[in-house]
Length: 564
Figure 1: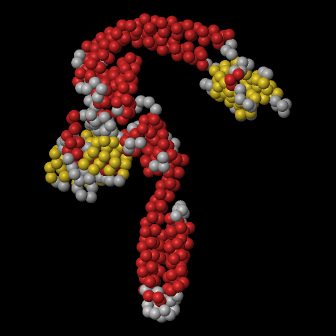
Figure 2: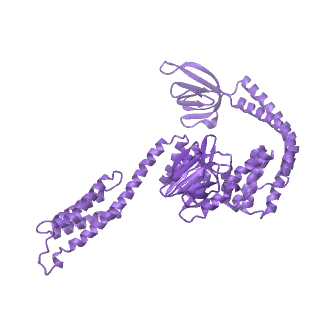
Figure 3: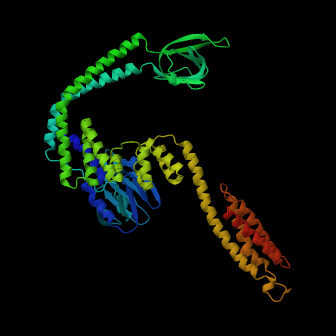
């Protein structure tokens, strides 16, 4: 029993403290670097070098307590070229700066031919190469920053855990036998109660007896009467089920009949009502068996409950005596320990007590409360995700683990207009088997639009700089600044103007035309006026007035857009 319990607590420990004490030196060594930072959120989401990647599906199971990635995943994520020599069991990893050589199961490696002591080894197990996750930081010479919601929570064994476990074993056998009988009786009763029970809905065609047609459906363990191909008679309608033109309610399926519709066509009609005498007899028999099993279970509960409650009290006493009773980290450790006992034994009292501790914890530290619920993936995922999203999108993303959760995360992030994070979650959901084609198509479209918006901003900066430069050049040809009124301005050199303005503007015009998904009417109008200003400047003689007017128009088009 204790071995099973501490298997759960080991999993929890790995989640809370990472990878176990055996490989902590690897992370300490990685954390000592000062060249760049790699962030690892709850061992699920890695952020580094401007990229984010989910690690869950890339982890491989090994004989150690460490976190390992498959060779291809490691190489792709951390930017290495890999070569595995099967005969010598040596792995060579190369990047732009260094060449690393490792021997399977050895903590001695080489970097560019020099000795490299390692805190943990590359493994070759079950015919596959596994690379320590910590190498991602160590070999890239970056600081590893572990972002963990419960880094100060410590789940530990209580004194005499074996004694409590043995006492539980003595009473759990008879109790679980009774509980098994109870579960079977309950399942049989629910099956009898729900067999042939359907949710019926449709448009009312006749009220006495109630007859529904049209888009009628009835849903139960299979579907009856669909679309306009059939109708349904309800013999015992519920008054609360009526709406203006329709009806909906739960009823038992009794039989099918053939009837003529208003067109004289023969159609299937399904009849619903109260359960038949035979159905009711079966329901009553199953209910009586369930009631008897429930009574027997309650009798066996007393001794069982006494043992379980003693164990619960020992856990609570241990944690309250080890630190501040209402400290969030103490409460979190207590809740996790109790939850682990529930998952190992199935005794609901452990779960009830864990929930009670969590309720207190929520008032003390809501963040720690949600962190504990994440450990066991408990409660509504969307609610948990929304809570952490308010604090940090990466922390929120790190709590997703299943295709459904990644999909839900993508949907929430999409509504929040965080399209890059939504795409990250949608891609992961798709990789794990969820159908995300429609959302990914929309996100890819939005990503392209975002990219073009960034390109447009860069274009606008270059364009504004060219206008400012031309404005200074045009001032040289203002007659009022070149002598007395009526004096002629100097003639512009067409070749110089073309080189400084016409050619750069033509390039900008081509770049603007290439942007397909952005609104650019003002830029296009401004560009046309700018072209005209250049043309009038290079006329012989120079038409300063026309050139200045067109330049003003070019500037005004941009200012008008900024005011929108």
